[in-house]
Amino acid sequence: MLHFLKAFFGNTKLFLKEKDLMKKYLIVGLGNIGSEYAETRHNIGFKILDQLAKEKEFTFETAKLGDLGTFRIKGRSVLCLKPSTYMNRSGKALKYWMEKENIPFENVLVVTDDLNLQFGTLRLKAKGSDGGHNGLKDIQEILNTITYNRFRFGVGADFSKGRQIDYVLGEWNEEEKTALPERLERSAQLIYSFILSGIKITMNQFNNS
Image (tube, rainbow, N blue to C red; front, side):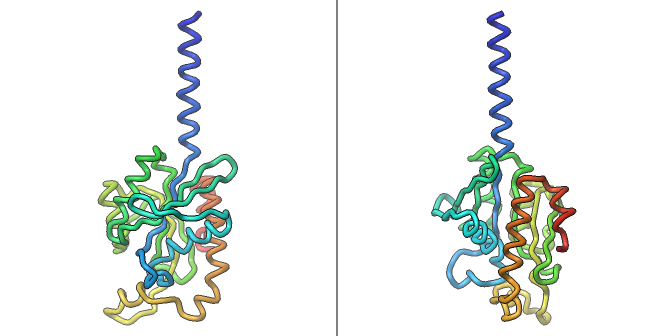
């Protein structure tokens, strides 16, 4: 009987631990550190995480390989990371915090800009290529997989040949600045849905919205 109880409660503790881990999430916003990049298209990942901080009333603090902030939503613990490694080394920071906090791979979401989508278009996917994005390329190489959750925010491609870098590192135009607040709020809602309802339901509800 004693052996049975030890086995039962031991397994129960293991189950509860695994259940707790499944309630931890890591949201990684891609961008470049420094005030000169703050309002650029390439930094939309940082900007969306700032929207979460505004709505959930938390602050970011400097930590290893990035700035971190946390909040809770309906029993889930969410870690928000803005890597300080610059865009093309984003994978190092993501992997470090995912492993340090024992966050399940399926509970990680990468937030990034996308030239292939019109401005303000939201697109959530569970896998895909890097699409020429240096941040996603590094994540793909570090994780050794193209199967990871990513939330792409469309920034459009209104630039002439050879001016791509100037465009993504350029600031929003006046029309985009006007539309951005609503798009940031919608982006935050997408992330909450990902955490609470899962990727499939969220894709159906928010993609291209």
